[in-house]
Length: 313
Image (tube, rainbow, N blue to C red; front, side, top):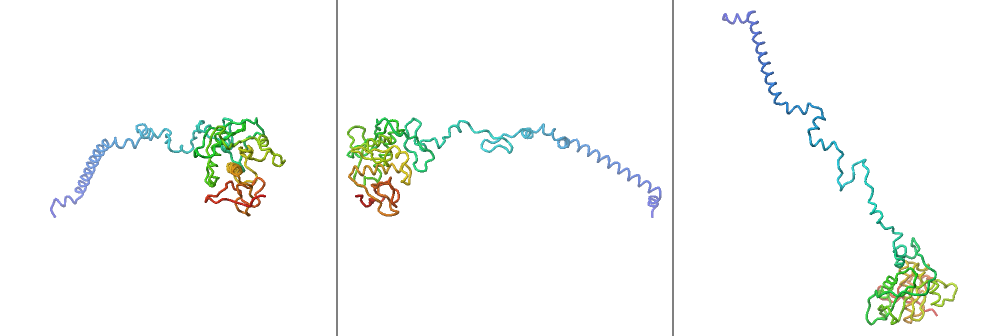
């Protein structure tokens, strides 16, 4: 072993070795400190927002500013939970029609003359029906088109009856031209307004109807319709309400009135029920009871077959 090695292994060598180690540790610490200091300076802009309080970072963040206010709801979606929705527009609510006041439900129009389209049995409201009138009539303008060679007819409504003459003419014309009507027997009709009319439909109050029809039987006073010469007199009460014996709306019963009285004008007599469950003939006096038949307003069915029954003596 050399002298130098023995010196290093001796007490003095060990002390010197420890001093060298301590010196290297100090130098390493100083270097690490310098590196950390340099790194910390460069990292300040990155680390500072994370070390500051939340409200400080929000102050410099545009996104955070938006979220500090109540969000604006999308017009196409519902309001946020807990928010109170706006009341409906008054104009929309006021403009919503009440079905109970419409002409189709009440049978009268806002002009004071009814549309005549109110429902009959089962109607939730009853139109005002005057029992009597002045006996004067308003003639409907030409509303219905028909063949030039058809029987001329006109439609009149008693003044104050509450039925629009134009609407009454439209409905009567539709009945006359229906494929289940007397057209199957070759009858055709065209509407006029003058005295050339060979058939006049008069919608009249019950009192006027009784006078024009010369009603005598107590059970029929104020209740029936009739044909008096060239006049088909339609009781306003029946026009608006239908008949308690007829299972259908008033609009359908109007067809029965027209078809029954036009049938008389064409020379047809009264018929009775052909059998239980069968359609009652249009020429049957259905107001006096159905006698087992089913209510029916038309002389023919949809296949063109005449709905016949035994003749009444």
